[in-house]
Length: 178
Ligand code: MN
Image (cartoon, rainbow, N blue to C red):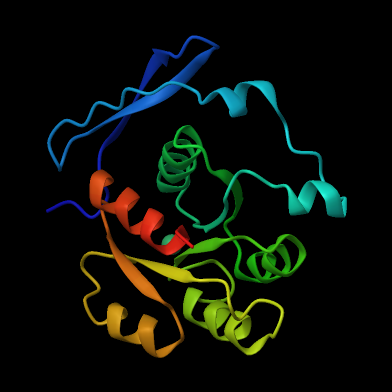
């Protein structure tokens, strides 16, 4: 079994512009049909400002992932499902982004160029400002032992790569529901 899913970009017209959808080979063909939600088309959240922050509609997800293809897949998949996305490929930057932006959820790759995702998780869970943010480890399918290590390091859950899109979205929604 290939470690990386074969991902093909397939443009789809969504009424307001062209957006990507995906065919993912190793889980069969998944064809995503979607429409941009009205609130995504008509409003853009302004950065900073307490009022905007309090009235924030979109759930904000921080993606920490150094594989470009996987990052793009997660980014586009979550964006078209109405989430606001922050992203980085570096552990140090992930800590800073989490502190500065208070995401509602963090998707954490384990192997990163600087810190490991496990180290980043420990740092975030030791910090009062970020310890309540749920963290889902996204682990390579071949690295079975990583799942236990992820939970020991403070991750709230884990997902194996390559992701299965329906169950992935279900897991994300579960961690975001109040
Ligand atoms: Mn990685």
